[in-house]
Structures are given as structure tokens and as C-alpha cells.
Amino acid sequence: MFHRSTALAALALTFFSLDTVRATPTQTQIQACSQSISLDNYQDTVTYSTSDSTAHNQSYSYSVSACTTPGVKVTSIYTQDLDSNTIYTCTLKQFDTTGTLFTTCSITNGAIATTAQSSGDQDWGDFLKVGQKPTFYTIENDYTVDYYTAPTASAASRKRRALQDEPGLEARSDLSPRINCPAGFSSCWTGVRDQFECINTSSDVESCGACPRSSDAQDCTSIAGSNEVQCFASMCKVISCDSYHTLSADGTSCEPNGRHKKRSIYATRF
View 1: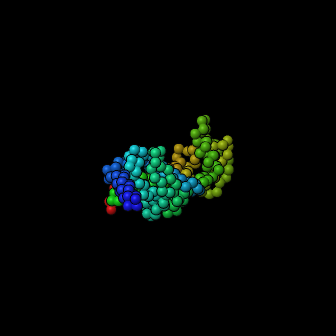
View 2: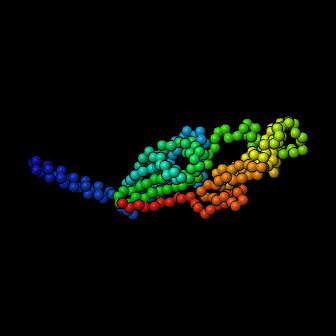
């Protein structure tokens, strides 16, 4: 009786082992799953506040049938600073029958923005790796991080911006200045009745060359592809451009250099 029980147990273990082997996804199945995975709401440029305390997250959609029958394993999820190659891990999750994988990472959106601001590291990527030896597939989605620090402008500047699209308001260049400004500053209408403010239009990056609301005013911060700008002698100058643009010969703009943000799936074998 003892030997019979032992034999039955061994036979059951054999069938269990065979089922386990059969459940192991093939390279073709791993590839099919990886090709069905998509990062939700992908944008090639995102804007974060340096004070945003929200944990950076990743949300993926995938084919339930391709990724769960048999089960394809998620081996790692992380966010990477592509300029410094620093990796921030995310909570490891596995595919299920919902068709959505959501996870949070060990860095906040504010910390990403602060890094972009302080170090100039604006190239980032979200990564998800699936499979098992000898075949793994990595889903990579790269993006550029723009940042801002709240409050983004003075109260007067915010008021000007709020009024820019208000119907019936004109630049009112016909009004004579109502305040005396220091040398080098211009008396500019705020957009509110007869209220004026002093602005150094020779160095103000948002009102470079002329008072706000004037057709001659330049907003240097709006130059496409720029990382750092300044207003010098009433002219916008670009100090540096992002990785996807090159500084123009005259230093006033950023020109596309042909590089593109990567959205790819690639295999590695061990």
C-alpha cells in the first residue's frame, strides 16, 4: 500500500510538471503579448510642476488572451532619466483579465520636473519588460519633460495673461504713461482700466522688446524646442535647445535635428 501511494504521488507530480512545462509561453507567444501592449495616453512631451507630489505612474493596455494564456510574466517596470541613465523602479504588477496594468513609481512628477530644471535632464522614458529566459521583450516609450515652478508669474503677469483673450480690450498704446519708471524700464498697461506697471522690456523674457499686448513684444519662453532663453538688449536669444533641436546659426531659434523620441518594442536573449 505504501509503495502504491508513493507511485501515485510520483505520477501526479509528473503530470503536474508536464502541465507546468506546457504552460510556459513560447517565444512567439511572448512576442505576441509584447506587441499588444500600449502605454495609455502617451504624449511625446509632458509638463510637470516642480511642486507636484504625485507619484509618477505608468498605465498599460494589453490583449488579455495574448498575455494571460499562457501567462506571460512581467519582469520589471521602471522610469529612466535618459540623460543620466538613472533608473527609478515601479511596483511590479502582472497581467490579469482586466486588460489594464497600472503601477506607481519611486519618483514623483515634481522630482522629475526638478531634475529637468536643475540638471537639464529633460529626456525620460517609461519601460516595461516581459518574458523569461531566453527571451525578453522591452516596451520603451520616451518623452521630453517640460517644467514650471508655481507660481509661474507675478500677479500682474497672470492678470495680463487672463485678459489677453478677453473681448473688447486693446493694447491702448494711445494712453500716456500714468507712472514714472526707473531708467531702463517701460511703463506698460496691465490690461486693467488705467493701471500700469514698470517692465524692463530689454531683459524680460516674457515681454522682450516691448510692453505686453504690443505686437512688437516677444515671449522668448515660447520658442519651440528651447531649453533656456534670455532677453538681451530687447532681443530673444536661445541659450540651449532640447535633444531634438539644434541651435540656429543666429542663436534666435531651435531647429529640428531629425532625432525622434523612441516608442519601440525590442527583444533581448540570454
